Length: 573
Image (cartoon, rainbow, N blue to C red; front, side):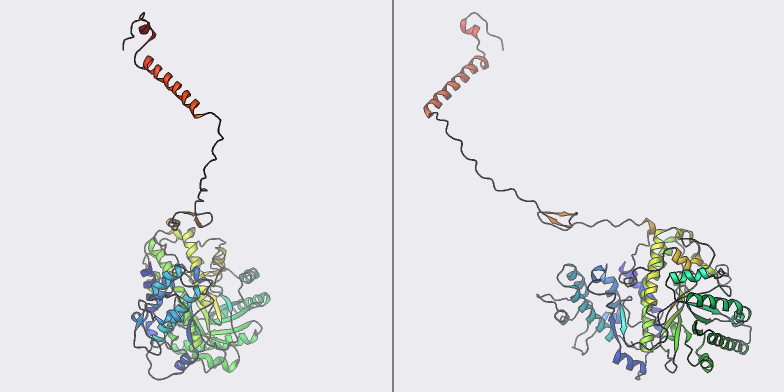
């Protein structure tokens, strides 16, 4: 189990290894990182109260820390030694407040000594802080690596966040409302939809608009803006590529003119609805000046991908934020599966790696001082089955068993975990997040009955997967590795009870019980004398003995009265 969890985490990090850049000269980011930014454990997640709730400290913490830098770290200033998880500095024990001659020599000692009750939760957290500081301080190019501060979502970059006029947006993207989505057209919006959005705690809608939609569906756009205003919700106008841009045979110059026209139209629409529209989202940073010329203060979201995180810089502009689209279903390792077990292990993989998505978000906000908005890719889909009827679809067997997931408790539980872990990571985005879609069909169901439902927040909520009850604890423990048997997994059985020595374990009181020993016996009082003299008692005893001997001779040895008197024959033996 430990190896599987570690391998999945390492694979996810390796996808982004190309973003780590070696730069020898001092840069603005290096100055920020060295002077104001530290990688620390998030005390809102892991603290004295929650540490006892961690099911496996080795998987949650040591699997990540002990795998960095070939497992080696040093102290600052150096002390002539190289350390690792098998060889911790002995000075850390005393510095963590550990006494009574206890010295923590390796990471396994931390787990076992704490389990035995010989060190406190506070002392464990002190040791973890020392270890995290040393590993992070021994890592190269942390000022350019979006994943340098990453311990399965338990650590955070401690820094001063940039100022932002937008914050905490909880949005849903109206994909499929104005133009076809992969699943087709979504149902038309009504005021009831906006009431349901508000009940789920949503504050904003993101409206994808292409040049075609802008030209042909102006009335529908204005109707949606009106319903949002009536519901007290805000709006993001999102530029999406036009059909011309998708056609490789079109002239690039003509396409560029069309896109610029769309940016200008979105800007004018935003200025017309200033009480409702809080930002526009554009595809290219080259259009920032176009927007600024018409709207100097209008907040802008500029589309980026993960590859931009190490070089992102909008510091020359005010009110410009990064719009990041995540994607967990676009490479073979993300989507390929051809058996039920592989389907479940695929979801387990995505669960296991979701919490680390907070790292690049916080990296951008701390190092580049650019707030992030999660604009796309936030959903529960882990495959590309929506595209299986297109010519670009590659069949790896990933879409053959969806029916197995519909009424499965295992899939429900792990989808809920997947949702919680993503939501926790995306809540770290300073500007906010937007779920992929609202409704993908008119079906009203309390289960995810078709693949497109995984992208629709209305369907996800109806299935009981949103909202999330315990968001803070979502990343405290890894997901259970029960994907091999799925719904056939046996319920946990209790382990052997503690050794109570001469007692026994009382399952009612959850403690050892012992027999209560009986009282020490005392001698009974002697009876009072009857007054019979010893001589009389002896005569009585002699008489009794005589009678016994006589009877024995007569009956036991064959004598009878006939033989004695001579008138009877002896009874034959």
